[in-house]
Length: 67
Image (cartoon, rainbow, N blue to C red; front, side, top):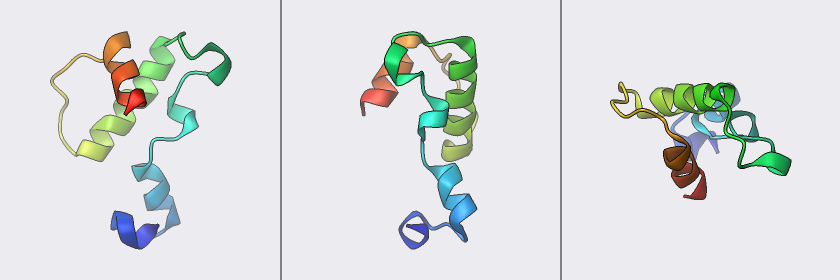
């Protein structure tokens, strides 16, 4: 996994993956709280290594997760 992601170690590889930690509770996936948006935005900005110029909305969140 590290090799395919170009990560130096496991911790770096984990940071590149969108994990359940960044998403809403599966039982209430429609409840996109500000905390969830913040976690996902932080991951996205780190992953893209750029400033995101789009506000993270509920619809954008659902679109990203669906992909």
